[in-house]
Length: 375
Ligand code: F3S
Image 1 (cartoon, helix red, strand yellow):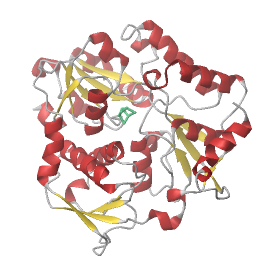
Image 2 (cartoon, helix red, strand yellow; image 1 turned 90 degrees about the vertical axis):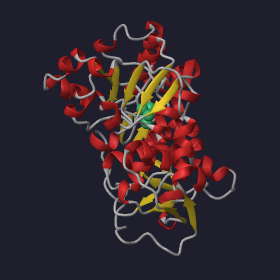
Image 3 (tube, helix red, strand yellow; image 1 turned 90 degrees about the horizontal axis):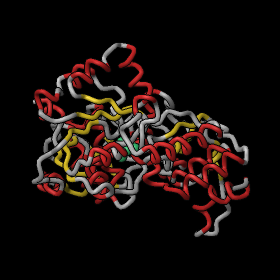
Image 4 (spheres, protein in one colour; image 1 turned 60 degrees about the horizontal axis):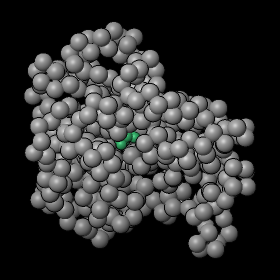
């Protein structure tokens, strides 16, 4: 791939309309399309060719999680040939200057955007979080689109890079409770399906909590295509300003319950999976309360390398391991270890995670909030 092709990639949104392409300078990028599960051999070859050509990113660029844990700690958990492929993918990104963060919550620690900054981010949950909560400006880029933008330093000036495109176009009328992160995710999933690419605004006391906000937005990005939402009191300058005269769409508690019912499994669960999006700021005390002895099931917590290293430094990893809690870094919840262990049914607290585990990995899922898992 040469620079001409990179420009073609970032000009794609203008091709259909025939308009003259316009661009905006970006200050950060976040790249998805990292997992060998998703990009396969064709992706391995494309990234190797790009890295061989000597291209380097122009802005701070972080990397989404992959399919395997790449450090010594991950040894033995997955098919070695898959780990080798995942290493090759990581190596190509690193040669292009991408930071090896392997996390889907870059906005928390490794690539923290400021309000008003233009970004080229892939990974829908991170896109929605950075626009909605942090007030940064990014469209939902494809993995290769975000990489092309980071290699050139600009992206197409379309969508939510334009101020008039950042205003909500519909109001969600939801009077039900959002008392935990699973209900927040189920509500987000319903809203994503209803919004048809429009920015939905919502007022809900239950969403004024960081974990619930994260799960609401991650699920909204799973069922919908909008890169941004508005949550009154969470989104910048929105306290008391969810506009009443916007066209409204009613969502009932029954709609939300239907999402939970769709993921009910009658199989006995074999493991508990936490961390979709990555549990980067989790409290060790909460996680310690999830002990295998108490639950009778192994627990896997998916997080960033940085967060795992912090636990290691605080001598908590061994303690957690002794209680049957494994901290998995570098990998998405769609982790190769689930295949090696042969799990057919799991519990998770993430609606986004449940959707992909069920539809892409064919694993049955039961949704339960962390406080009910912990008992
Ligand atoms: Fe992150 Fe994978 Fe979930 S990239 S948001 S853990 S599906």
